[in-house]
Length: 258
Image 1 (cartoon, rainbow, N blue to C red):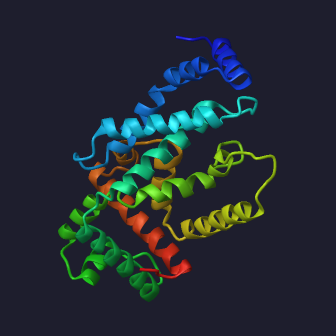
Image 2 (image 1 turned 180 degrees about the horizontal axis):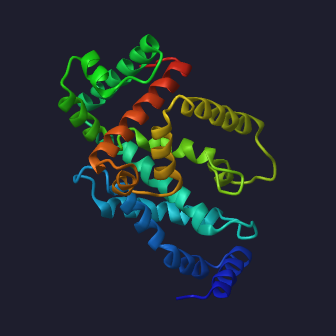
């Protein structure tokens, strides 16, 4: 196990001398991060998605992080790297498009039903009301939400990192610094942040608590269930419904392009 001063020396030699052996040492030292992130993401994915494949993608993200990290900045590499690793894995999952077309269609139906009910009722619809709107049983709705779990979380996770407080790392800080700020990118980040912040205000207090515990504190669905007195599967269903509501809200702001 390398000491902190030894790691700092590796960073200094790699960045100043550009020697690949120091780069390789850093990648090897931080490689457990790829396994850690891949494991958390894989926990809610179908068994057909191999953990080894996710780890491989994570390693590519780690390599990119090592190459682009500025060791002179006062942020931990682990914080920076986890964002890069997660992004690489999520990009691969999107390219795989593992969610069946029929399930994707059901997700859109639920999105539209939630939007319709919220407009009509002027409040968040209950599961029973949502099931009735969709003309399906409550059990069928819960089963669909369970199958959809993690299917629409991937993009939100990237957006959510923009909502972290000023002392933490946001996606905007993972962009390579080319000595000058791109005004267009800065405006785009601000708009995304404002839109997402507004969308989150429509969540109930319990939904906000679930989002906070899951994304900011790293709780599992089982741990959140223990805190709120609900089962893990119920938290999973609520989480999926939150994602669909936010996704539908964002689609409404940008216009449905499907």
